[in-house]
Image (cartoon, rainbow, N blue to C red; front, side):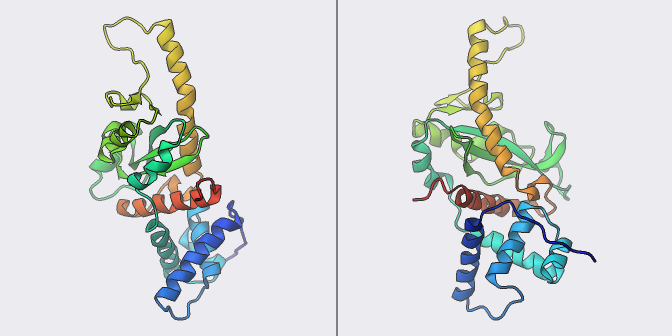
Length: 260
């Protein structure tokens, strides 16, 4: 089998952060000799998640078995997922934002045995629903645990407590039409209803202005989707939670904007 090295579009800060966590984990458990050291296990996990390299490619590139490559990648995911923040912990940081832009996205997955809850009628495919919160600079601030793809965005936001937390914190919030009926301090666009007059010129202008703001949430989701593993996940939907949490932690390390 032919193999060649490939680049990972991440900084050395991200690599060193993950390698340090792996090294500390091995020291705590007094792990015995391993095929790859922390400095090699970290790029293996990043190549799998950032570049979407399959375990077959990792086997050839890092000279390990397929089972070893899978185990090393899963160990790194679990380590970072364990230090992620829930919404309650992230709220003090969100309160300092000029405004917040929550939005939902579908992460595609393979069909599973109990496939009906994971089929999204909106996107016409199977997947899981993830809610994100972006700031005024297009940055991804927080991402929620995933829910089955058939879950409506408003329902998902209520399950995660996003609407209540942002309203109680008095954070100016802009959302799209999928959150109609959220109430609280959430600002939704005007929506024309059947058998009612068309939107006025003022309402259309407000919708255009809000759309420019909500585009920041779309750009934050695009940042999340730069991790190629999310193009289509081929694992149990329950494992997607840890993968998204892994990506969120490393995203903050890479951006280095919320340190301290």
